[in-house]
Image (cartoon, rainbow, N blue to C red; front, side, top):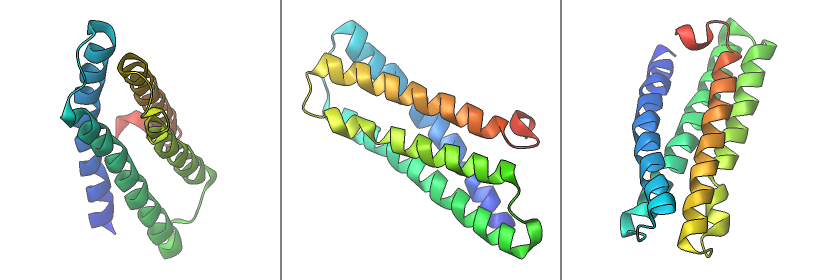
Length: 132
């Protein structure tokens, strides 16, 4: 069970790295009128895929540890629900894939920022919150 928690912790840092790169890249496309690159779709897929993976690992940990005796206190359920919502928001950029480049880049930045806000709130719901 500790392995799952450790994996959950490692994946969060991968998400941080990809998120920073994605925010910078899409902000440059949006504000700098830079052309879209082939790797932009890969970057966005990596972001949403890693968030999905993180949610999956978190749900596995929730069910496994909850069934093993940790239980299902409300803060764990709230954290899980918020993170699932964050994963859904992380997939919203797929909805505007046919929009003009500037609009798509702007919407990608907004979606990523909303995911970050949801993650912040979700982690803050945990007893140790951001001190972990």
